[in-house]
Image (cartoon, rainbow, N blue to C red; front, side, top):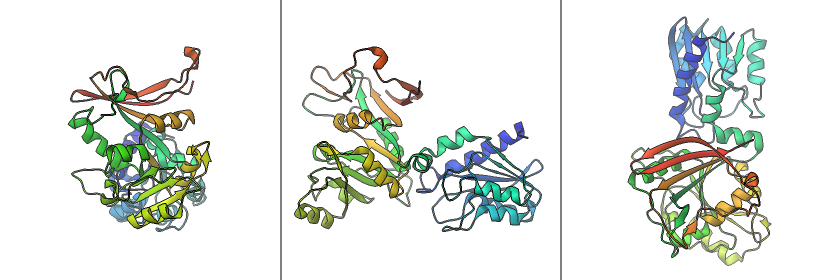
Length: 366
């Protein structure tokens, strides 16, 4: 039976899981506690793929004190041999008396089997305490396992009149230093950063996050470039992180060679009309273990993603300025004949960053 005590300890395990926010790709962020009576005797957080899982770290810290204790873990313990051994077996071997799991792991290699193995060994397992928080920590891993595509987080900086650039295309910088620093954190947490080739040609961005903290891995830079117009000397080739260029199925071999020599991996994607099929691209990225993708979109790419209903989360940095007549709108959808037909979004949080607003939204499901 779930208790208030369970909720308290699971909240601490979730805090541990957040330590892996920037580092666990392509694995989920997981935390674990071993509790004996009212005392925490072991703590663990999974930080890097291929290294020890949260349960194993917590059990090692607890040592003999784990026997007869309760383990709180934010995701179902694994039951298969990957780069590390099965955590369910480690819990059984440690002699724990009870396990509280925030949620079942949708990975087909686990999918309830870890819980079943624990119960078969006579260990009671309670499921669901902290599930919403665990899901919020791992939206990309869960989306990839449940839907076969990454979690798409669209990021835009806009003016009060809903524009991303002046009529002449000038857009740097709408927001202030604090908002731009926050973008670097959003970049660092994802598996990949995606832009259209128009952004590369107009702004020549580096795309790699710039942070005070050091990163063991940098997000992949994904360029949507149907006809391979990306310059071989683009700044993104000189910044940390792999470069993947998604292109149409029929591109001259000379263009392939030029960009491959620059260091790009080329991904052929089928067309939908004259443009790359966005869903086909996302399925390909999921096959390459991309969990969360931050899309830094201009109006054209944003419209394609909205039209395909592929935006899971929309982060809008709102600058208190007006860009005036002829300014380039953030996204063009519709037209709609009735307000009832217009897509509506649910506010998930508003944060003041100096003089700018960071507004996080998700699609409304009603």
